[in-house]
Structures are given as structure tokens and as C-alpha cells.
Image (cartoon, rainbow, N blue to C red; front, side, top):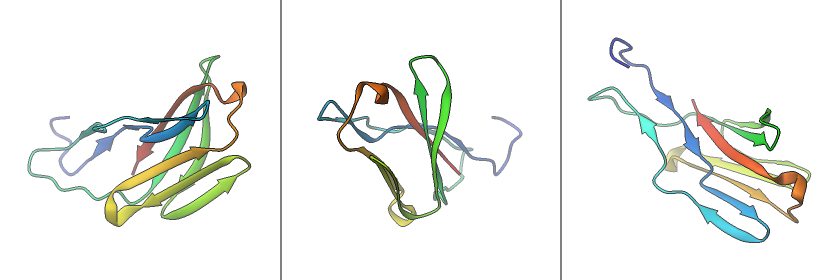
Length: 102
């Protein structure tokens, strides 16, 4: 990332999701910064890569909570965290969930 001063690229894998009723956490999240840079996430986008390899955009959340059916996502920029909750999980929910911070 040399030469990209001030640019922050981050990819955070799902911090919290429910799979068959089991809470799954990944910590620590991965984040790349230029040396000496500071970063406070301003918004988060959540994605699902399904078993067929297709990437599906689920939510864009600057802050607060969004719900779509059984999916509920929350982002708190001041705390630098976001979560995705799936209620009544189904086999069609299978895949890899990840988020991108901006």
C-alpha cells in the first residue's frame, strides 16, 4: 500500500453471525493502515458470498440499525463496531459473511 498516503483499505470479516443457532465470533478483525494513520469507520457494508461463489450486497449502514426480513445489522461508528444477526437461520443462509468499512 506504499504510495497511497491517507488511503485506508479494510476488510472485516463478520464479527458476529448466527449459524444454526450458534454464535460465531472472529477476533481480531483485519485492518490495514498507513504508518502513522488514524482511522474511524464512517460506514459499513455487509455482504454474503453464497455457496455458488456469488457475492450479494446485504446492507449499507452509515450508523444505526437496518433490518431486512430475518437479517438485522447494526453499526456504531464511535465504537468502531458492527454486527450482523440472522434470526431463524436456514440452509439458504449458508455462505461466508463479511463486511467492508469505509
